[in-house]
Image (cartoon, rainbow, N blue to C red; front, side, top):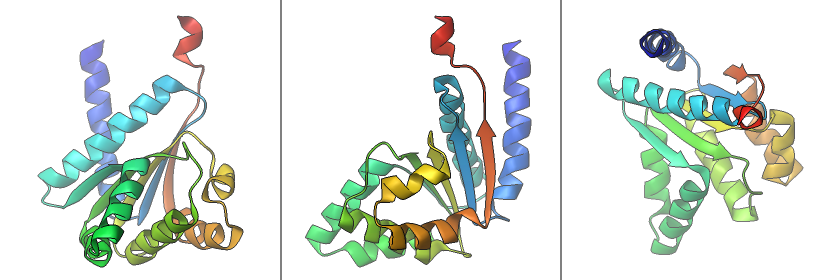
Length: 169
């Protein structure tokens, strides 16, 4: 059974790696299901790994660590260099989006990252929240509109639904 599941997951990853470089954004979301969220994390990592095998540059960040790294780059005076590096990365994976609300500078930084990549490079965002909740997470409506306009309308979405495995334990 595990072997079949592994082959099936590999087929999904192989199919999606083609899609990921045809679409500027892949949005993975688990609907209130811890098990599905772990699959998303696995899928995002698998796609990043596959991108590297195919010769593309990929970067994986937990949202909070990405925001912290951006803040540190700003303090060190290297934020533009950091943004340029992210903009040149073929695939940027942002995991755990929406666990905390963004601060003002984080909103602006996220907008900058998305703007630099829009229509040019691929981005995967992994979240447990529906896009409609992202307005609250991002905070400021104007910036949220700008970010979501660039992400949502050109994205390829995968949403898993189902009962949480926690209920079965």
